[in-house]
Picture: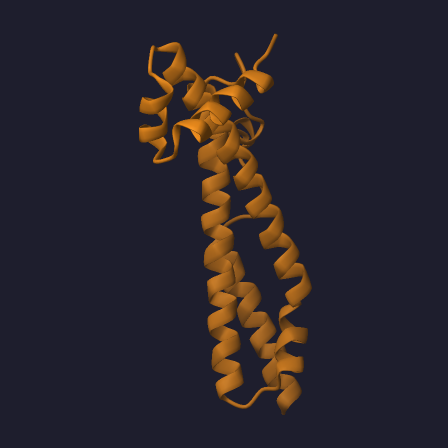
Length: 154
């Protein structure tokens, strides 16, 4: 009977994952967004669709992860062993998937931060003003601008 419960739980989790994550295939419009900037790389307006897409993927993955963890908590409270809970959820895969989405988000966040810092500088903002805009020191604002210049097209 415990095996039936584990199988049912795995099927329920798969159904919940489908609901949370949506369809597996991207539409043509979504693929255009994921491909990144089509014009001058490094411009905030060109990076923003990519940044938004990484945010959307992160939110969806976190929501799926939250659902998984709530189900695990419920199962553990009902007496399921941790070994069984980890096995039916394929925790290693879930962790790798979350790490990958977090890495993609961080890459997009850094690119966006640098592009905005450079655009602010190009529009005449001082490093102090850029630092205030990001809530960071002038020194860190300088690094944002410098790193964006290193990534700028030549």
